[in-house]
Length: 459
Image (spheres, rainbow, N blue to C red):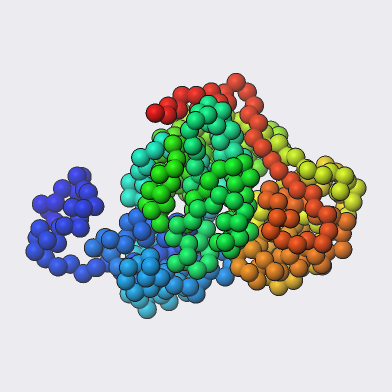
Protein backbone atom coordinates (compact mmCIF):
# COMPACT_ATOMS: atom_id res chain seq x y z
CA UNK A 1 0.00 0.00 0.00
CA UNK A 2 2.92 2.33 -0.55
CA UNK A 3 0.86 4.31 -3.09
CA UNK A 4 -1.93 4.94 -0.57
CA UNK A 5 -1.58 8.16 1.41
CA UNK A 6 -2.44 7.27 4.98
CA UNK A 7 -2.22 10.88 6.13
CA UNK A 8 -5.14 11.68 3.81
CA UNK A 9 -7.07 8.62 4.94
CA UNK A 10 -10.82 8.60 4.55
CA UNK A 11 -12.96 5.60 5.40
CA UNK A 12 -14.62 5.64 1.96
CA UNK A 13 -11.12 5.43 0.40
CA UNK A 14 -10.43 2.29 2.42
CA UNK A 15 -13.77 0.81 1.37
CA UNK A 16 -12.95 1.44 -2.30
CA UNK A 17 -9.31 0.37 -2.06
CA UNK A 18 -10.03 -3.24 -3.08
CA UNK A 19 -11.76 -2.05 -6.24
CA UNK A 20 -8.96 0.37 -7.09
CA UNK A 21 -6.29 -2.31 -6.81
CA UNK A 22 -8.45 -5.13 -8.16
CA UNK A 23 -7.52 -7.27 -5.18
CA UNK A 24 -10.04 -8.95 -2.91
CA UNK A 25 -8.82 -8.77 0.67
CA UNK A 26 -10.06 -11.04 3.42
CA UNK A 27 -12.38 -9.35 5.89
CA UNK A 28 -11.13 -8.72 9.42
CA UNK A 29 -13.11 -10.58 12.08
CA UNK A 30 -14.16 -8.29 14.92
CA UNK A 31 -15.69 -9.00 18.32
CA UNK A 32 -17.32 -6.03 20.04
CA UNK A 33 -16.83 -6.04 23.81
CA UNK A 34 -19.73 -4.08 25.25
CA UNK A 35 -22.41 -3.46 27.85
CA UNK A 36 -25.56 -2.67 25.83
CA UNK A 37 -25.07 0.88 24.58
CA UNK A 38 -21.82 2.10 23.05
CA UNK A 39 -21.30 -1.35 21.48
CA UNK A 40 -24.36 -1.15 19.22
CA UNK A 41 -23.56 2.48 18.38
CA UNK A 42 -20.04 1.53 17.28
CA UNK A 43 -21.46 -1.30 15.21
CA UNK A 44 -23.91 0.95 13.35
CA UNK A 45 -21.63 4.00 13.07
CA UNK A 46 -18.47 2.23 11.91
CA UNK A 47 -18.58 -1.54 11.37
CA UNK A 48 -21.92 -2.39 9.76
CA UNK A 49 -21.33 -1.03 6.28
CA UNK A 50 -17.54 -1.21 6.34
CA UNK A 51 -16.35 -3.72 3.76
CA UNK A 52 -13.13 -4.43 5.67
CA UNK A 53 -14.73 -5.75 8.86
CA UNK A 54 -16.93 -8.67 9.78
CA UNK A 55 -18.49 -8.49 13.26
CA UNK A 56 -18.72 -12.10 14.45
CA UNK A 57 -19.95 -11.61 18.03
CA UNK A 58 -20.64 -9.25 20.94
CA UNK A 59 -19.84 -9.79 24.59
CA UNK A 60 -21.85 -8.19 27.38
CA UNK A 61 -21.05 -7.20 30.97
CA UNK A 62 -21.89 -4.73 33.81
CA UNK A 63 -25.68 -5.09 33.46
CA UNK A 64 -27.21 -8.29 34.92
CA UNK A 65 -29.06 -10.54 32.49
CA UNK A 66 -28.17 -8.88 29.16
CA UNK A 67 -25.88 -11.62 27.86
CA UNK A 68 -27.15 -14.56 25.76
CA UNK A 69 -29.19 -12.33 23.41
CA UNK A 70 -28.86 -11.69 19.68
CA UNK A 71 -28.49 -8.52 17.64
CA UNK A 72 -31.45 -9.14 15.29
CA UNK A 73 -31.62 -8.89 11.52
CA UNK A 74 -33.72 -5.71 11.94
CA UNK A 75 -30.44 -4.07 13.03
CA UNK A 76 -27.81 -6.08 11.12
CA UNK A 77 -29.72 -6.37 7.79
CA UNK A 78 -28.29 -9.88 7.63
CA UNK A 79 -28.12 -12.86 9.96
CA UNK A 80 -28.41 -12.10 13.69
CA UNK A 81 -25.17 -11.71 15.66
CA UNK A 82 -24.90 -13.56 18.96
CA UNK A 83 -24.08 -11.95 22.30
CA UNK A 84 -22.13 -13.80 25.00
CA UNK A 85 -20.99 -13.17 28.58
CA UNK A 86 -17.69 -11.28 28.64
CA UNK A 87 -16.17 -14.12 30.69
CA UNK A 88 -16.25 -16.20 27.46
CA UNK A 89 -13.97 -13.74 25.64
CA UNK A 90 -10.72 -15.82 25.61
CA UNK A 91 -12.56 -18.85 24.21
CA UNK A 92 -14.45 -16.76 21.66
CA UNK A 93 -11.26 -15.19 20.29
CA UNK A 94 -9.98 -18.64 19.37
CA UNK A 95 -13.29 -20.25 18.40
CA UNK A 96 -14.40 -17.41 16.08
CA UNK A 97 -10.93 -16.58 14.75
CA UNK A 98 -11.20 -13.03 16.05
CA UNK A 99 -8.60 -10.58 14.69
CA UNK A 100 -9.68 -7.45 16.59
CA UNK A 101 -11.59 -6.87 19.82
CA UNK A 102 -13.24 -3.45 19.99
CA UNK A 103 -13.79 -2.28 23.56
CA UNK A 104 -17.10 -0.41 23.44
CA UNK A 105 -18.21 0.45 26.94
CA UNK A 106 -17.37 2.96 29.61
CA UNK A 107 -16.66 3.59 33.30
CA UNK A 108 -13.37 1.76 33.65
CA UNK A 109 -10.31 2.58 35.70
CA UNK A 110 -7.00 2.60 33.86
CA UNK A 111 -6.09 -0.60 35.67
CA UNK A 112 -9.28 -2.28 34.41
CA UNK A 113 -8.62 -1.00 30.89
CA UNK A 114 -5.07 -2.41 30.96
CA UNK A 115 -6.38 -5.75 32.21
CA UNK A 116 -8.82 -5.95 29.29
CA UNK A 117 -6.06 -5.10 26.81
CA UNK A 118 -3.88 -7.82 28.35
CA UNK A 119 -6.63 -10.46 28.09
CA UNK A 120 -7.26 -9.66 24.43
CA UNK A 121 -3.64 -9.56 23.33
CA UNK A 122 -2.53 -12.59 25.35
CA UNK A 123 -5.24 -14.63 23.66
CA UNK A 124 -4.02 -13.75 20.20
CA UNK A 125 -6.21 -10.83 19.04
CA UNK A 126 -5.54 -7.14 18.51
CA UNK A 127 -7.12 -4.51 20.76
CA UNK A 128 -9.10 -1.73 19.09
CA UNK A 129 -10.61 1.55 20.31
CA UNK A 130 -12.62 3.89 18.09
CA UNK A 131 -12.39 7.67 18.31
CA UNK A 132 -14.73 10.62 17.73
CA UNK A 133 -14.09 10.99 14.00
CA UNK A 134 -15.57 7.57 13.29
CA UNK A 135 -18.31 7.49 15.93
CA UNK A 136 -19.67 11.03 16.37
CA UNK A 137 -22.75 11.91 14.31
CA UNK A 138 -23.28 15.48 13.09
CA UNK A 139 -26.64 17.09 13.75
CA UNK A 140 -28.29 19.73 11.58
CA UNK A 141 -29.49 21.48 14.73
CA UNK A 142 -27.44 23.19 17.48
CA UNK A 143 -26.38 20.49 19.93
CA UNK A 144 -24.95 20.60 23.47
CA UNK A 145 -23.40 17.40 24.85
CA UNK A 146 -23.20 16.71 28.59
CA UNK A 147 -20.75 13.97 29.57
CA UNK A 148 -18.85 13.07 32.76
CA UNK A 149 -15.69 11.73 34.36
CA UNK A 150 -17.54 8.94 36.23
CA UNK A 151 -21.00 7.42 36.51
CA UNK A 152 -23.14 9.31 39.02
CA UNK A 153 -21.27 12.62 38.70
CA UNK A 154 -24.56 14.47 38.26
CA UNK A 155 -25.11 14.92 34.52
CA UNK A 156 -28.87 15.02 35.06
CA UNK A 157 -28.72 18.01 37.38
CA UNK A 158 -26.60 19.87 34.80
CA UNK A 159 -28.94 19.03 31.92
CA UNK A 160 -31.99 20.16 33.93
CA UNK A 161 -30.23 23.46 34.71
CA UNK A 162 -29.36 23.96 31.04
CA UNK A 163 -32.96 23.24 30.06
CA UNK A 164 -34.21 25.92 32.46
CA UNK A 165 -31.72 28.46 31.07
CA UNK A 166 -32.45 27.68 27.41
CA UNK A 167 -36.20 27.69 28.00
CA UNK A 168 -35.95 31.14 29.57
CA UNK A 169 -33.60 32.50 26.90
CA UNK A 170 -35.30 30.98 23.84
CA UNK A 171 -38.98 31.02 24.75
CA UNK A 172 -40.18 30.13 21.24
CA UNK A 173 -37.65 27.37 20.58
CA UNK A 174 -38.36 23.69 21.13
CA UNK A 175 -35.71 21.75 23.04
CA UNK A 176 -35.41 17.97 22.75
CA UNK A 177 -33.22 15.61 24.79
CA UNK A 178 -31.33 12.68 23.27
CA UNK A 179 -30.32 10.15 25.89
CA UNK A 180 -27.50 7.61 25.79
CA UNK A 181 -28.86 4.14 24.92
CA UNK A 182 -29.93 1.56 27.49
CA UNK A 183 -31.07 -1.34 25.27
CA UNK A 184 -31.34 -4.12 27.81
CA UNK A 185 -34.43 -5.89 26.45
CA UNK A 186 -35.67 -7.09 23.06
CA UNK A 187 -33.41 -5.16 20.71
CA UNK A 188 -35.70 -5.05 17.67
CA UNK A 189 -38.19 -3.05 19.76
CA UNK A 190 -35.60 -0.51 20.91
CA UNK A 191 -34.21 0.88 17.65
CA UNK A 192 -35.94 4.27 18.04
CA UNK A 193 -37.94 5.36 21.09
CA UNK A 194 -39.74 8.63 21.84
CA UNK A 195 -40.92 9.50 25.34
CA UNK A 196 -43.45 12.28 25.98
CA UNK A 197 -45.31 10.98 29.06
CA UNK A 198 -45.51 8.23 31.67
CA UNK A 199 -47.62 6.10 29.30
CA UNK A 200 -44.67 5.93 26.88
CA UNK A 201 -42.47 4.64 29.71
CA UNK A 202 -45.02 1.90 30.41
CA UNK A 203 -45.50 1.16 26.69
CA UNK A 204 -41.80 0.47 26.18
CA UNK A 205 -41.60 -1.53 29.44
CA UNK A 206 -38.65 0.59 30.54
CA UNK A 207 -36.09 -0.60 33.05
CA UNK A 208 -35.78 1.31 36.33
CA UNK A 209 -32.53 2.80 35.04
CA UNK A 210 -34.29 4.17 31.97
CA UNK A 211 -37.15 5.55 34.07
CA UNK A 212 -34.64 7.29 36.36
CA UNK A 213 -33.10 9.00 33.35
CA UNK A 214 -36.24 9.90 31.37
CA UNK A 215 -38.72 10.74 34.13
CA UNK A 216 -37.17 14.07 35.30
CA UNK A 217 -37.35 15.49 31.75
CA UNK A 218 -40.83 14.18 31.02
CA UNK A 219 -41.93 15.64 34.36
CA UNK A 220 -40.68 19.05 33.19
CA UNK A 221 -42.57 18.75 29.88
CA UNK A 222 -39.69 17.83 27.51
CA UNK A 223 -39.49 15.14 24.83
CA UNK A 224 -36.81 12.45 25.22
CA UNK A 225 -35.44 10.23 22.45
CA UNK A 226 -33.36 7.11 23.00
CA UNK A 227 -32.81 3.69 21.46
CA UNK A 228 -30.10 2.07 19.34
CA UNK A 229 -29.82 3.66 15.89
CA UNK A 230 -28.75 7.24 16.60
CA UNK A 231 -28.65 8.31 12.97
CA UNK A 232 -32.36 7.52 12.75
CA UNK A 233 -32.96 8.98 16.21
CA UNK A 234 -31.34 12.34 15.55
CA UNK A 235 -32.99 12.57 12.13
CA UNK A 236 -36.39 12.11 13.78
CA UNK A 237 -35.59 14.48 16.66
CA UNK A 238 -34.47 17.22 14.24
CA UNK A 239 -38.00 17.32 12.81
CA UNK A 240 -39.36 18.72 16.08
CA UNK A 241 -36.32 20.29 17.75
CA UNK A 242 -34.72 23.72 17.44
CA UNK A 243 -32.06 22.82 20.02
CA UNK A 244 -30.82 19.36 21.03
CA UNK A 245 -29.23 18.30 24.31
CA UNK A 246 -27.41 14.98 24.40
CA UNK A 247 -26.92 13.40 27.82
CA UNK A 248 -24.31 10.67 27.75
CA UNK A 249 -24.41 7.55 29.90
CA UNK A 250 -21.86 6.63 32.54
CA UNK A 251 -18.71 8.55 31.54
CA UNK A 252 -18.94 7.78 27.83
CA UNK A 253 -17.88 10.27 25.18
CA UNK A 254 -20.55 11.98 23.11
CA UNK A 255 -22.29 10.09 20.29
CA UNK A 256 -22.65 13.44 18.51
CA UNK A 257 -20.28 16.15 17.34
CA UNK A 258 -21.41 18.94 19.69
CA UNK A 259 -21.40 22.69 19.29
CA UNK A 260 -20.58 22.83 23.01
CA UNK A 261 -19.05 20.02 25.09
CA UNK A 262 -19.73 20.03 28.84
CA UNK A 263 -18.15 17.53 31.23
CA UNK A 264 -19.27 16.95 34.82
CA UNK A 265 -16.61 15.98 37.39
CA UNK A 266 -17.29 14.38 40.77
CA UNK A 267 -15.07 15.62 43.66
CA UNK A 268 -16.20 12.65 45.76
CA UNK A 269 -14.00 10.65 43.36
CA UNK A 270 -11.07 12.92 42.39
CA UNK A 271 -9.24 9.97 40.85
CA UNK A 272 -12.20 9.56 38.46
CA UNK A 273 -10.66 12.28 36.31
CA UNK A 274 -8.24 9.61 35.07
CA UNK A 275 -10.91 7.01 34.23
CA UNK A 276 -11.69 5.59 30.79
CA UNK A 277 -13.10 7.34 28.86
CA UNK A 278 -13.66 10.14 31.40
CA UNK A 279 -10.18 11.53 30.77
CA UNK A 280 -10.95 11.69 27.04
CA UNK A 281 -14.05 13.74 27.83
CA UNK A 282 -11.89 16.21 29.74
CA UNK A 283 -9.52 16.60 26.80
CA UNK A 284 -12.51 17.33 24.52
CA UNK A 285 -14.31 19.62 26.98
CA UNK A 286 -15.23 23.27 26.40
CA UNK A 287 -16.43 23.50 30.01
CA UNK A 288 -16.02 21.39 33.17
CA UNK A 289 -18.51 21.54 36.03
CA UNK A 290 -17.27 20.24 39.37
CA UNK A 291 -20.53 19.13 40.97
CA UNK A 292 -21.35 18.29 44.63
CA UNK A 293 -18.93 20.81 46.17
CA UNK A 294 -21.37 21.18 49.08
CA UNK A 295 -20.89 17.55 50.12
CA UNK A 296 -17.26 16.98 49.14
CA UNK A 297 -14.21 17.62 51.32
CA UNK A 298 -12.23 20.76 50.44
CA UNK A 299 -9.07 18.70 49.90
CA UNK A 300 -10.92 16.50 47.39
CA UNK A 301 -12.28 19.53 45.53
CA UNK A 302 -8.76 20.95 45.33
CA UNK A 303 -7.43 17.59 44.14
CA UNK A 304 -10.14 17.38 41.49
CA UNK A 305 -9.16 20.81 40.13
CA UNK A 306 -5.48 19.79 40.11
CA UNK A 307 -6.29 16.57 38.26
CA UNK A 308 -8.44 18.39 35.69
CA UNK A 309 -5.63 20.85 35.04
CA UNK A 310 -3.21 17.97 34.43
CA UNK A 311 -5.48 16.77 31.65
CA UNK A 312 -6.74 20.10 30.23
CA UNK A 313 -4.87 23.13 31.50
CA UNK A 314 -7.01 25.78 29.76
CA UNK A 315 -10.57 24.54 30.13
CA UNK A 316 -13.11 26.73 31.96
CA UNK A 317 -14.25 25.31 35.32
CA UNK A 318 -17.49 25.99 37.18
CA UNK A 319 -18.03 24.76 40.74
CA UNK A 320 -21.54 23.83 41.76
CA UNK A 321 -23.59 22.47 44.62
CA UNK A 322 -25.93 19.54 44.24
CA UNK A 323 -28.76 20.82 46.41
CA UNK A 324 -30.67 17.92 47.94
CA UNK A 325 -34.37 18.25 48.65
CA UNK A 326 -36.78 15.85 50.36
CA UNK A 327 -40.47 16.12 49.53
CA UNK A 328 -41.73 14.90 52.92
CA UNK A 329 -39.06 14.98 55.66
CA UNK A 330 -41.51 14.26 58.49
CA UNK A 331 -41.91 10.72 57.15
CA UNK A 332 -38.31 9.86 57.89
CA UNK A 333 -37.06 12.16 60.68
CA UNK A 334 -35.84 9.97 63.59
CA UNK A 335 -37.52 6.96 61.94
CA UNK A 336 -36.45 3.46 60.94
CA UNK A 337 -35.79 3.53 57.20
CA UNK A 338 -34.35 1.60 54.30
CA UNK A 339 -32.38 3.43 51.64
CA UNK A 340 -32.74 3.20 47.86
CA UNK A 341 -30.10 4.45 45.44
CA UNK A 342 -29.36 4.62 41.71
CA UNK A 343 -27.96 1.17 40.82
CA UNK A 344 -25.18 2.04 38.29
CA UNK A 345 -23.71 4.75 40.52
CA UNK A 346 -23.25 2.55 43.58
CA UNK A 347 -22.36 -0.67 41.75
CA UNK A 348 -19.94 -0.42 38.80
CA UNK A 349 -19.79 3.39 39.24
CA UNK A 350 -18.05 2.92 42.61
CA UNK A 351 -19.86 5.78 44.39
CA UNK A 352 -19.22 5.26 48.10
CA UNK A 353 -22.01 7.44 49.46
CA UNK A 354 -25.29 8.18 47.73
CA UNK A 355 -27.81 10.96 48.38
CA UNK A 356 -30.08 8.65 50.39
CA UNK A 357 -27.27 8.16 52.93
CA UNK A 358 -26.72 11.91 53.18
CA UNK A 359 -30.44 12.44 53.73
CA UNK A 360 -30.58 9.68 56.37
CA UNK A 361 -27.75 11.31 58.29
CA UNK A 362 -29.34 14.77 58.00
CA UNK A 363 -32.66 13.57 59.44
CA UNK A 364 -31.14 11.25 62.05
CA UNK A 365 -32.71 8.13 60.60
CA UNK A 366 -32.04 4.63 61.85
CA UNK A 367 -30.89 2.83 58.70
CA UNK A 368 -31.81 -0.85 58.53
CA UNK A 369 -29.59 -3.50 56.97
CA UNK A 370 -31.15 -4.23 53.53
CA UNK A 371 -29.98 -7.85 53.31
CA UNK A 372 -32.53 -8.90 55.93
CA UNK A 373 -35.34 -8.19 53.47
CA UNK A 374 -33.69 -8.74 50.08
CA UNK A 375 -34.91 -11.42 47.70
CA UNK A 376 -33.75 -12.89 44.39
CA UNK A 377 -31.61 -10.65 42.21
CA UNK A 378 -31.48 -7.90 44.87
CA UNK A 379 -30.06 -10.38 47.37
CA UNK A 380 -27.53 -11.50 44.77
CA UNK A 381 -26.28 -7.99 43.92
CA UNK A 382 -25.98 -7.03 47.60
CA UNK A 383 -23.79 -10.09 48.04
CA UNK A 384 -21.70 -9.03 45.04
CA UNK A 385 -21.23 -5.56 46.57
CA UNK A 386 -20.83 -6.27 50.32
CA UNK A 387 -20.10 -2.61 51.22
CA UNK A 388 -23.60 -1.44 50.25
CA UNK A 389 -26.13 -0.54 52.92
CA UNK A 390 -28.61 0.72 50.33
CA UNK A 391 -30.91 -1.13 47.94
CA UNK A 392 -29.87 -0.54 44.30
CA UNK A 393 -32.68 0.24 41.85
CA UNK A 394 -32.05 -3.01 40.02
CA UNK A 395 -34.75 -3.23 37.38
CA UNK A 396 -33.19 -4.42 34.13
CA UNK A 397 -35.78 -7.18 33.68
CA UNK A 398 -39.30 -7.88 34.87
CA UNK A 399 -37.85 -10.33 37.41
CA UNK A 400 -35.47 -7.63 38.70
CA UNK A 401 -38.42 -5.27 39.10
CA UNK A 402 -40.48 -7.85 40.97
CA UNK A 403 -37.54 -8.63 43.28
CA UNK A 404 -36.95 -4.92 43.90
CA UNK A 405 -40.60 -4.20 44.75
CA UNK A 406 -40.87 -7.32 46.91
CA UNK A 407 -37.70 -6.33 48.80
CA UNK A 408 -39.13 -2.87 49.55
CA UNK A 409 -42.47 -4.33 50.61
CA UNK A 410 -40.72 -6.93 52.81
CA UNK A 411 -38.82 -4.29 54.79
CA UNK A 412 -39.91 -3.83 58.41
CA UNK A 413 -39.41 -0.08 58.49
CA UNK A 414 -41.33 3.16 58.97
CA UNK A 415 -40.49 4.61 55.56
CA UNK A 416 -38.25 4.49 52.49
CA UNK A 417 -35.66 7.14 51.59
CA UNK A 418 -35.82 6.99 47.80
CA UNK A 419 -32.64 8.59 46.47
CA UNK A 420 -33.06 7.85 42.78
CA UNK A 421 -35.04 10.97 41.76
CA UNK A 422 -37.89 9.12 40.02
CA UNK A 423 -41.34 9.12 41.62
CA UNK A 424 -41.57 5.36 42.25
CA UNK A 425 -45.25 5.66 43.26
CA UNK A 426 -46.10 6.35 39.61
CA UNK A 427 -44.75 3.00 38.46
CA UNK A 428 -45.00 0.53 41.36
CA UNK A 429 -47.23 -0.36 44.30
CA UNK A 430 -45.25 0.10 47.51
CA UNK A 431 -46.86 -0.65 50.87
CA UNK A 432 -45.12 1.98 52.98
CA UNK A 433 -44.47 5.75 52.97
CA UNK A 434 -41.79 7.08 50.62
CA UNK A 435 -39.70 10.22 51.03
CA UNK A 436 -38.62 11.21 47.53
CA UNK A 437 -35.19 12.79 47.19
CA UNK A 438 -34.45 15.22 44.36
CA UNK A 439 -31.38 17.32 43.69
CA UNK A 440 -30.71 20.41 41.60
CA UNK A 441 -27.63 22.32 40.48
CA UNK A 442 -26.63 25.60 42.10
CA UNK A 443 -23.42 27.22 40.85
CA UNK A 444 -20.82 28.73 43.17
CA UNK A 445 -18.69 31.73 42.16
CA UNK A 446 -18.71 34.30 39.36
CA UNK A 447 -18.76 31.97 36.39
CA UNK A 448 -22.04 30.14 35.91
CA UNK A 449 -23.90 28.23 33.23
CA UNK A 450 -26.13 31.15 32.32
CA UNK A 451 -23.12 33.33 31.45
CA UNK A 452 -21.54 30.51 29.44
CA UNK A 453 -24.70 29.56 27.56
CA UNK A 454 -25.40 33.22 26.82
CA UNK A 455 -22.66 32.92 24.20
CA UNK A 456 -24.23 29.80 22.67
CA UNK A 457 -25.80 31.20 19.52
CA UNK A 458 -29.01 29.68 18.17
CA UNK A 459 -30.14 30.64 14.67
